[in-house]
Length: 276
Image (cartoon, rainbow, N blue to C red; front, side, top):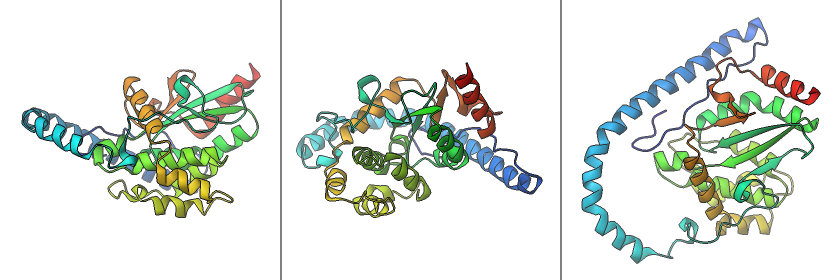
């Protein structure tokens, strides 16, 4: 996909499950969409390389002016600040408390997912694998650690990735992360439209989750309580050397890079790990 002169989200090469002859055409269409996404992403990379040389010169000339503007506006936008303490959401785990855990700690299998709520490829993964993931988590066989990043903000501009991630962390504080997580993907705007940057939109979507739209949740969203935590999570993604979102790790292997992966195959892997 074309993210302009920034980073790019790398769509997963998941193969949709082989369910029936009637659905074969739908699967072909999904595969074709992923091929188109990859071609767009290659074109974006070529343009990015061409722009680097010219952009570096411009950056040098503009550096002094940028520093002056940042100094003048320091502290004006609390929601964009990332210098404050990183306030992790309730129950966050892992290194630096950057993972939101879903599932029982006793589960023998674990999945690590790095995702961006504005990322179209992440939505493809979610809609394809969600029923299987919910089933395995509900059965106590799988635990998922979600890491939230802002790759689309960085590439397309805007702040919707960060603010949606903050809102999801606010939902975690309320014990409603999974439900709100799914609502965000079900209502994902086109990646060129930064709808999630609007607090009122995020609060409106909270109304689709029973008991989430509370004064505490609204304050958390409007104050950007977890913004610095989201920034820290995104920095961990960058330093981890990952190629794009979604990155889905199982046993150290990135399932997004496996063209043979299907929900049925993932379920078999988890079942096998639970028997071992």
